Length: 343
Image 1 (spheres, rainbow, N blue to C red):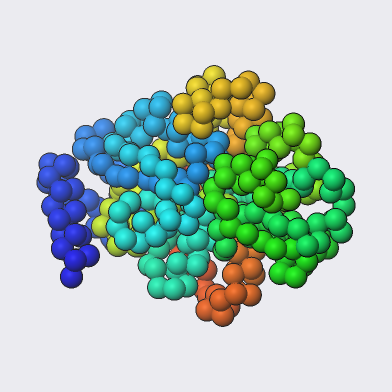
Image 2: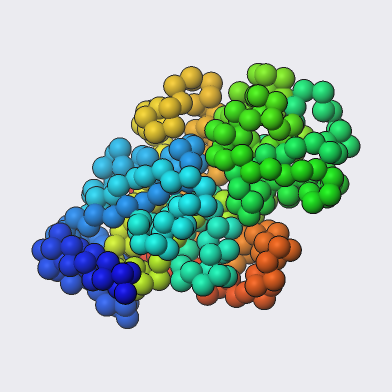
């Protein structure tokens, strides 16, 4: 009942903010939705989007905000940081409208009843480097050691397990995987000696290497398919506001194209949001992010393969789950049809 009342109140607030203009119906054609999204007369729509870290992986979102891309598409976006798996929890609770977190979190929530839809995957590969502490030179040296992840079942956990298997180790028996928090927390735990291995985001890997750590597996270079970061919404929100979701995806596609072309603006956004002011670290982060982004971030079933495999070993509900039910690539396709990735 409380959720229903909240939904009614939210609907009333939205109508008021939009001057009472009706959104296209759920059955509206992609062309009609795109037209509504592109309309210069569309009233600004306020929504909240959450990132699970403040890393450079979300450069496109920072740039979309700082460069006015969101506003030019009729959106007032409040970008918030909500750590790790909590972003999806907040999404399901209706506390935010869009989660930019990991697909593994979305899959886990969907399997357990969350009615969510992934509409884009801007980071379709692992952006991690598996780093190990000084004194560890080979995979066998990791046996019995502590490996840090953000939380169990998270994207860093799944990436860690993939890396360990690449090294010929069993993640469940050869090492102890411990949840230590965000990417920044993993770096802090590594520096303090609390853990002896962890997947590290660029440029945190450089920080660790400056302190004697070394890479054993560079997952970023392998280009393995993954749902590292997604754009995910509740199905009821998508049904009621297809035009708004389209505007958001339009903004993403345009921002990705701009990030690849405008390094100066991108570095300014990284300094503001990710606090990356060291030229070497910021440059590495920029290169990683813009190299990882696909021009058109389509969500596909294949990207979920590792998440399904790893989560199924702990949760029987994942086995046989139809991933196609939680993805919708029509919004990215609409942006592609209008050539937004060429801007």
